[in-house]
Image 1: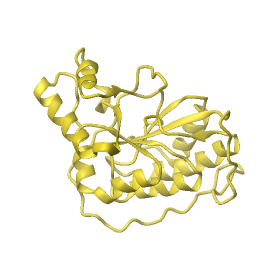
Image 2: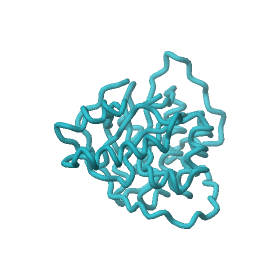
Image 3: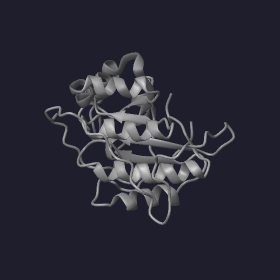
Length: 231
């Protein structure tokens, strides 16, 4: 598993489940400056191709997670979704779809709690409850919300059989950024082994979905492959 340097702060999250609407398919956007529409045949990279690790936090969301999954499927991309336990419980069908389509699940606590400063009892509750819900579907990865950790976090995670993982870079899609900003960041910071933080929940992720589609069209043409960070 690739090592990650110090991450940036992560987004705020409201964990109250919404009423589950019918997901609306996302149309593939055009790439600015003459790129792909996302509908052209995608080259299939071999095992020697550079790999990017796309990771998605704060879901599952009943609208945006299915849209992200549609985009990933279009490019044959697989990723790791760090799910909030309470939302995984609220949207079991979406959670199962992630697994069924070849992606992996990571632990992002039960209610998006900052792990730094938690008591051992509170840590065991939020991390353990989420891992119990994921069961055999869950990977052995824990991503602390906001990258909040203290001197006990890694050791306590290890006692749950989990490794703490963060990220290398992010387009900061929890801010007011455009789809083109998201896409440009993914393309500009692409390199072999990079861990990219994106979000499929926690707010309006429509620009993330569109930007992801733009970027994957360009990166696929450049020969990148996209694999889960955690298995």
